[in-house]
Length: 268
Image 1 (cartoon, rainbow, N blue to C red):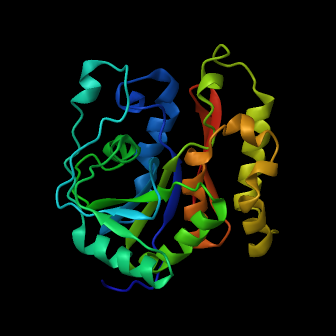
Image 2 (tube, rainbow, N blue to C red):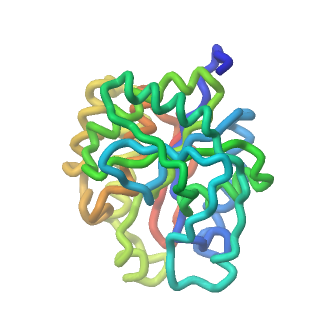
């Protein structure tokens, strides 16, 4: 891998509800516009590594296929949502490089040469990079859902930033499925907004020391209305991986309603 003097970007995004961002759903319009525009701030990566909320394994696992298929890992959507294509090539050599990095950090990674891309990858990337020319791979979350372990996972991946590899954490800063549809669109949700404010402050405030920022992210359950916003934290933890990669204050690049709830995206 060529070494770059400028670290590649790290981006945490909301990927929306299933395939809805690709189906013209009006509740995703602002998110779609953001995803269309953000690549202009990301340079031209040689590869994309994506950590999706929709893949958990007991040990960190990396897609290793040359040409991954797509996993339509959602249900109840129109027939066209099961015909979506995103023929981006895989990145087997990069997968082996990541396996080496993780093993050197004391983890026990493995390659999965059969798993395809889930919608946490192909939905946002089809909007961001519609030509599907950039090699992509996924790294799993850990089934433990331990926030400290996910920050450590990010730290182990940090050398990739010197190799022009764009790293994306694909989740959702609010992910309470019942709450999305419990109130009419436009109804204020003070619990959602309080947690969103806490998360943005935690990730962007330059007054926080690295230790304090990490302490807050590790103890995220103590944030205002944390378990209301994340009854289960798999959509938040890609952010922890992103922070582990960067370990610096983030820049807020999106803070709008998606499916009637405030959601944010952060760029390092």
